[in-house]
Length: 228
Image (tube, rainbow, N blue to C red; front, top):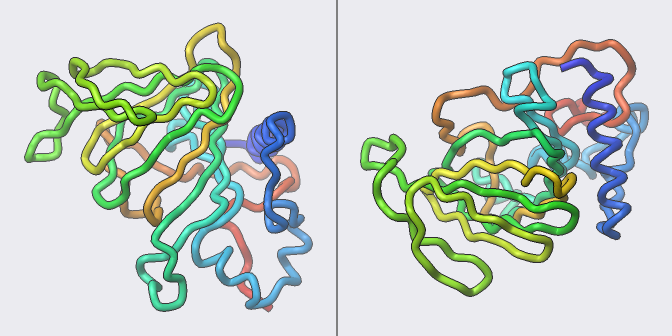
């Protein structure tokens, strides 16, 4: 992705948060220049990969496959003594036409919540013992206190305020329902590790390769400099 595309996407996410009164913590407002001066008091932000994030899944077509997000809080299972939080929280922003590919998580369970804007469609499949997609068996769905069963591959529509619980090994993808506009999602989960806890089907990447065509508006969560 070009840095200019990333900057544009992060500003759009920031504006969406403002529109729906979703206020961000101070570290989300640090400039790249400020990050060059910060010491070990912000190691939790660095080590737990808090802050701004973006993915095009390595496909180079962000407006079709990808989205932008912010990790607000998280632990670190590899450094549990130092960072004992067992939970995480994110904000995700998708525009119409964007798609998050099919995947499951080995470790974390999560709730995905529509915080405002359009409707999100989340497609669900069970997985087989060999971790491939089960295209046949019905899926048990948990949405806002309701438990019910749907055929494999059903898209669950979440309007603003609605949520779905995604358990371990449940394949899911998501996109925005056409004609409803961009959506701001919340994610509440167990401790998150995007480097090791995503199984995509088919396999894709996670973090973009960046072409530096302008200065960064904000540093991404995998770009922080070491503490001074």
